[in-house]
Length: 93
Image 1 (tube, one colour):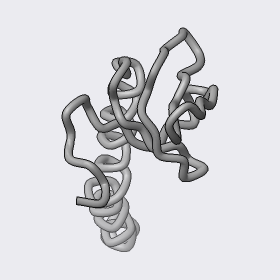
Image 2 (cartoon, rainbow, N blue to C red):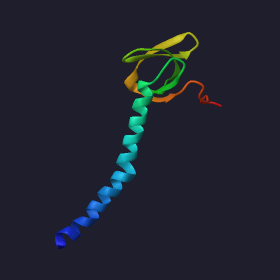
Image 3 (cartoon, rainbow, N blue to C red):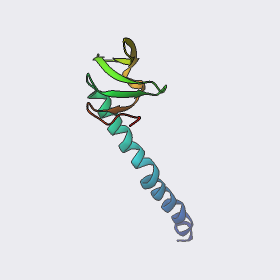
Image 4 (tube, helix red, strand yellow):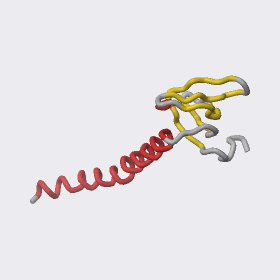
């Protein structure tokens, strides 16, 4: 019985850690993956490297992003850090 009582604080710490840290992170990752899978022309995206631009073309693995008027960059979908749907609020307003 003393062994279980000694392990109880460690178990409680693990349970708290799971609900406060691991589970919310898994939800955020699932939401991001769904947003990346649904990215379409006109969406504003932010890459892991910090590029911000508007999607002009999508592919199975790649997205073409216009970062400046007339300047298009081909980006791997897996490197997208954030997707703002069409008509979303601009970053500097």
